[in-house]
Length: 239
Image (cartoon, rainbow, N blue to C red; front, side, top):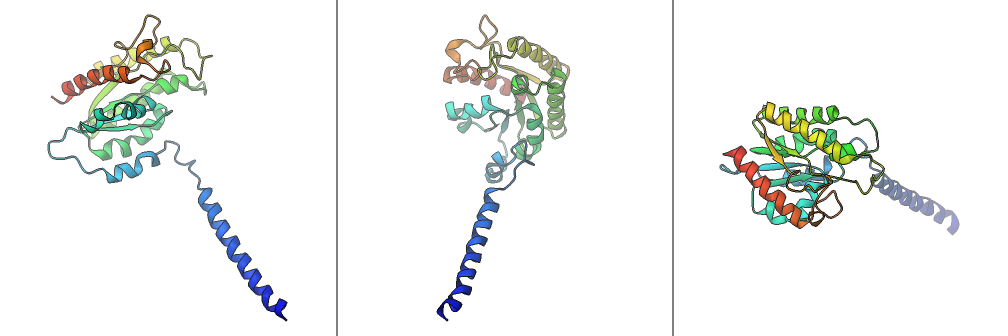
C-alpha cells in the first residue's frame, strides 16, 4: 500500500527534475549564430551610455583587436576624453559594417575612426580582395556622412608576418596596397587620413620591434605614438 502511494510521488519528482534540466539545457544551448557580428558584445554598454553632452566632442573608435586592446594598455586615453572604444578582437570589415548602426550611429558621435582590413587580409577564407575591403569601408563612410558624422580613415599598422598565419605570403605588401587605396579614397572624399603605418614601420615593412608585442599588436610605447597621431587627426577633423 505504501509503495502504491509513494510511486506517483516519485514520478512527479522525476518529472519536475527533468523539467529543470530541460530548462537548464535550453539556457545553455542559446544559439548566437544569427549574431555573427557580435552585436551583443557592446549592447549593454551602449544602453548604459548617456547621450552626448551639449558641447561634447564624442568620437567612436571602430575596429578589431588593435582598438580593443588599446583601452587595456592605455585606458586613460579613453577615460580622459570623449572617446568610445568599440573594437572587437578578430573582426573583419563586413562585421564592422553590420555593427556600424548600433556601435557608431546610435551613439551620436561627432566623428568615427575606422580601422579595417588587417583581419580580412590575414583570414583563411581566400575570398578577400582590396575591393571587398574597400566596399565595406565605403559603405561605413557613406553611412557616417549621411548621419552627419565626420570620417577618419586609418592607414593600417604595418605587419611583416602574422604569427597565426605564417604561411601567408607578403602581408607587408598587401597592407601597403590596401593603405594606398584607403589614402586615395580619403583624399577623393575629403576625409581625414590617420596614418598609423609611417610612425611604426621598420625597414622590412613590419612594426618596429620596440613598439610591438607580436609584430601585429602595439605595446604601450606603440599605443603612445598612435595616440599622438590620433589626437592630431581628431583635432584637424573637428576644428
